[in-house]
Amino acid sequence: METLLYKFDMALVVLYFCVFVLYFRAFFSNHRPIGRVFLIALPVVLVLHLVKLMLQGKCQGHCPIVGLGETFSFTALALGIIYFVLERRQKYYATGVIFIGIVLLFQSVTIYSTSNETILAENLRNIPFAFHGPLALIGISAFGASALYGVLYLILFRLLKTKQLILTII
View 1 (cartoon, rainbow, N blue to C red):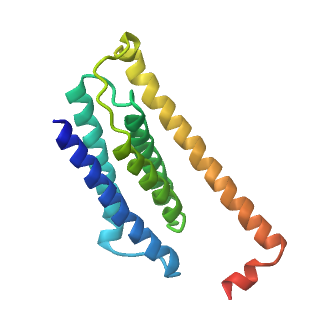
View 2: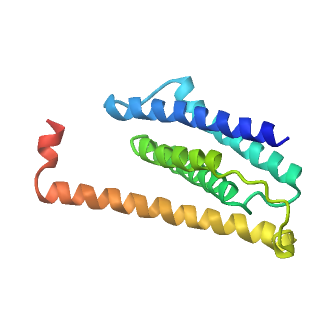
């Protein structure tokens, strides 16, 4: 089963890379991306990622955020879902290349940090941890997303202040 989960992780990295390429093309094409593939690519990959984490939790018998790789994978999923909700709400796709790039990086780290931890502390198996851990990671991912938007707005402010934005648009 571990090899199946590892192959699932590899497939997720490839799928996230394909989504990253779609967002990269949309970012540099200067028009709103329209198309079925673009609209359904990210939600499909996020659902597959969620299925993978649920399968991993069922097979291992604990919440799939115990190890380093599992934590990075769950954080990648949380950041991807947060970006997906923001994208659909704002109807603005240009920041996708940054967010999906970070998600791709986190999911890539998952492949290299897989570990077979068979001995777990008893407090990692209890029910409150199964709720607290994922909710804490979702909150941290939301703070990370807001910090990233803050940095983007700060960069935009500095470009406007130095009047370099006009040169980059032309």
